[in-house]
Image 1: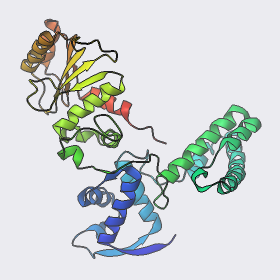
Image 2 (image 1 turned 180 degrees about the vertical axis):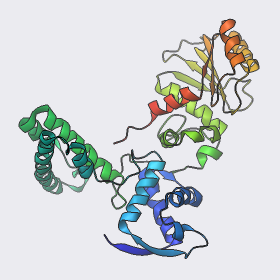
Image 3 (image 1 turned 90 degrees about the vertical axis):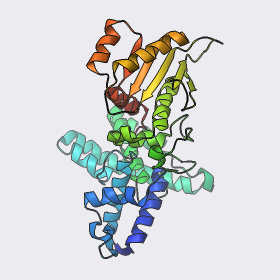
Image 4 (image 1 turned 90 degrees about the horizontal axis):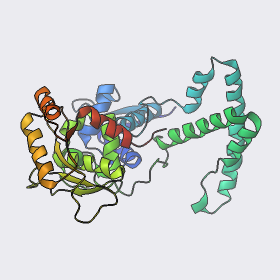
Length: 337
């Protein structure tokens, strides 16, 4: 492995560029430095009181990129292990499966070499590598176990290429880059990869769910709207201010003109538990709007008193609490290799 001497500024700038390209998220210097410092990568170089630069091995740089992409929710593991090594350790305990793995490795190498040769013979815009021949031959020789292992190999290669510090391949061709800080500071809704909240923010929250209570209150409303939009409902997003306590109105996809909302929603990004007064208020809004039900979406939970009152009085008001939010975000996140 080679090494290179980088100044502190050059290191931060290069990591910001490659991680921004791969993830679609622009990090501030502090957002980038903190996970690296706490993980031990380049600790002296990144220290403002340190030498201001130093020699960095290429594998250290690669490891740092993978760690940052993991922290942003863009790869499934912080460990920079090649898939071929992971598969070997996975199958080495079973001689039969290990033999299949070794045979499939030879088949993969020969098939991909031919596929790459064919791709290079095509015009530049059509040079994607087609793995069909590899998968077909794996199925012919080894049946379903061979096909399954072929798919595992292809998925592993894609994962390694998408998070590589040296390549231009990425899992999503982002149309733009957005600043991670906007999740916490910006009131603006709308997204190039989503309806109300950008997919990149959702992936980040899936990996860093403890930050859910720190996001901007308007982004929290956007998160709720994004979930119901993906579930197939029509969303009427409130103005955010002076909305009389109704943040969203949710309608069936086949909305009937002038029909009341299916659900009215109030979002509460709070630490304290939801009290009786809010449940009463939402129930009053349900009656006023002639909605089927009300929903309180919160980063906390209903207080015992509020929950007892809700059930005892038969209020058609539900709560999507912190645990429910965790499930929503996991459901919406990008599937990872």
